[in-house]
Length: 380
Image 1 (cartoon, one colour):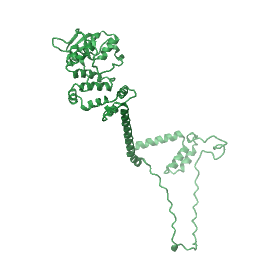
Image 2 (image 1 turned 90 degrees about the horizontal axis):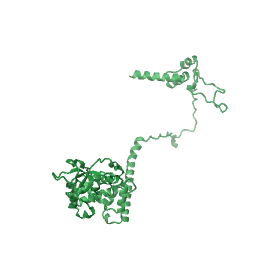
Image 3 (image 1 turned 90 degrees about the vertical axis):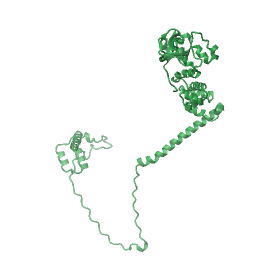
Image 4 (image 1 turned 30 degrees about the vertical axis):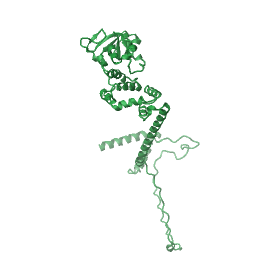
C-alpha cells in the first residue's frame, strides 16, 4: 500500500556480524556494523534535501533504527551510468533507506552504523525506488513535489500506469493527482512546497485541480496564474452561493418558529350612519336620568408603618430614600392582628401585601420556605 512503512531491522535473519556484504552461506540479509564512512548515500534518494538533522543528534550515542542498504554491485546492475559518480569501493554499501540517519551519524561523529544489507531490494529499479520512497512518505517534512517525483519515477519503470498501479498497490487516480502537481510551473510548485511547510503558498488540493486543467502543461507561468485566479474565484462564488442558499432555507423556518405575533390593534367600529330615508326624527326625545352611583362602603384603613407627612418622606429637601420593606422594623404585636384580621384570605395579592407589611424580611422568607416544603411534602 502507498505510504506503507516497513521495519527493515526485522528482515535480518541472522545475528549481527562484523563484515559487510551478503552472507555467502544462505544469501539471507543480515544486520552488520559498518563504518559510517563506508555507508554511501543513495543517488536515487527521492528527497531533494535532508533538512534539519538536529532531531537525530542522539545517534551519536545510540542508533534506534537500522538502515537498509545494498551492495555496489547490485546497485550498478540497475544504473551502471552512476559508476563514476558513486565511486564505491568493495567494502562500501549504498544506503537505500536511512539516508538521514547516515548523514546525522556523519555530522555528529558516530563511527559505525547498524545496517541491513539486502540485495533483493535491487531486483529492479521499481523495487529499489519503492523501498526508498516508503520511509520518506511517512515523514512530515517530505513535501508533495518530492513525493510526486518519486511516484512518477517508479511508474516510469512499468509499461503502463495501470500496471504500475496494480503492482504497487496504488489507484490510478492517486497517481494522476501526483502527476498533476508536476504539470505546474516550477514557481507554482515552489508555492506548493511552501504551503506544505506551513508557510504562505498554494494548497495541494487547489494545485492538483489546477494541474488537471486541459493543456495546463503547455501554458506559461502567467497563463497558469490566470487559470489559478479563475479557479479561486469560481470556488469563492460557489461558497457564497451555498451560504446564501442555506440562509434562504433557514429564513422561513426561523420566522414561523420564533416570531412573536404582533399585537392586533383594537379597532373601534365607526358609528353607523343611517340612510336619509330612515334618519331619526329631529325632535329630541327625553333622556332618562342616570341611576345614582352607589356610595362606596368605607373600610378600615390598613395599618401602615410609613409616616403620612413630614420629613420622613422623600423630597428635594430631605433626600433620604424610604426604607425598603426588608429594612423596616417589625411592627408592634397588635398590628399583625389588626392588619391580617380584615384581609380576604382568598385574595392572594392582598394577603401577600398584608404579610409583607406585617412580617420582617427574614420571617417572610422563612414563611415562604415553610410553605414550599409543605407543598413538596404534600404532593409527594
